[in-house]
Structure formats: C-alpha cells, structure tokens
Amino acid sequence: GRIPLIFKSLPTVAVVEHFASCAIRNPKMSLFPLIFREMARPLRMMEHQMRLAEELFPMMAYPRIRDASDGKESVTQDREKFQVKLDVENFAPEEITIKALNGNAIVVEAKHEKNDENGSISRQLFRKFVIPKGHDMKKVESMLSSDGVLTITAPNKVEQVEERSIPITHVDASEGKS
Image (tube, rainbow, N blue to C red; front, side):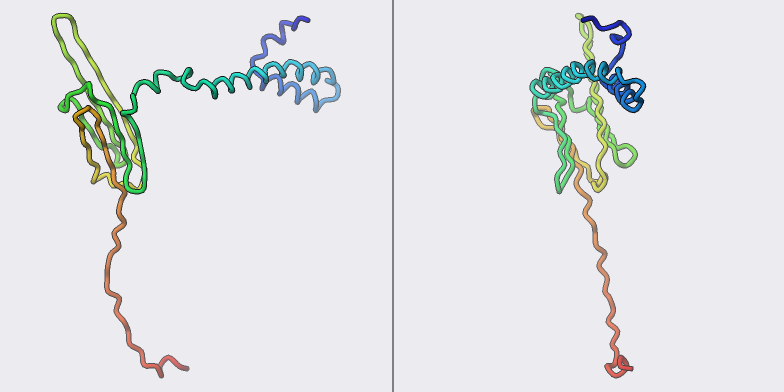
C-alpha cells in the first residue's frame, strides 16, 4: 500500500540505512529493520541504475566540455617535459599574454574587443596551470602555430652533477697492518 508521509520525507539511502542499522543494534526496535530495509531496496536499485546510465552515456552528462576543444586543447606530461596546448585561434598574437606566477604556475590570458556600427564583440580567455615539481620554469617556451594553437612547454630539470677531483692518499702497506 501507501507509504506514510513521515517516510516520504527521508532524503537518501544513507539515512534509511542508518535507521536500519540503529534498529538492528537495539532489539526493542525489532520492526524497524524490516521496514527500513524494504524502503532502502528501491532507492539502492535506483542509485545503481543511475550510475549505470552515467557509465553507458557519459557524453550526455558533459556534452559541452567534450565539444569545446575539438582536440586542440591538451595537457601532457612525459619523461622530458610538461606541455600545454590551447586553442587561441580567435585571438591575435598581441592579445595573448603568458605569465609565470609563484615559481610553479603559468597563467595564459587573452582578450579581444571589437566595436563597429552594429555593436561590440568581446572575448576573454583565462587559464592557469600549476607546473609539477621537477620542471625548469626558467626554460619555459611558448609557440603559436598558424592554426591558432598555443603550445607551452616546460622541460624537466636536469640534475647537474658537480665534477670534482678526489685526491688519492698513498699509504705504505706496512702502516695498514697492526
């Protein structure tokens, strides 16, 4: 039949399971485990089916994120470098600035404004990237391709081994014996 109004206001499976676990620990509340267990089952099934739907149809959940870059934007890290590629084709080179912050972050800003008799157009881009430890911020390079892809590369730091001569002390063989 009908579910009493008090039970309709319970928000989630977690609340239902909490009450059921309390009821199991207290034998005086012997009817509650049965009620709450039965109420929790459809909620658990619905949660399970929602998770399956997210796994089966991930593009439906985030269509704009996937379509926005068209494969022109990426962040990669390998043994030699940390690299960022950004699509900045809607901006002129003089409208783009790249700055290093706090020794381990890079900020890319681009701003385009155009006014004409029909109105104005304004575009802005702001991206901040934290460069992982072990990369040389002093050797960061940027390149802008003809198709509007900005590539920023931070090479790995190369550990420089200081070379020094170690003197050899000559010892008489008879001195070493006791």
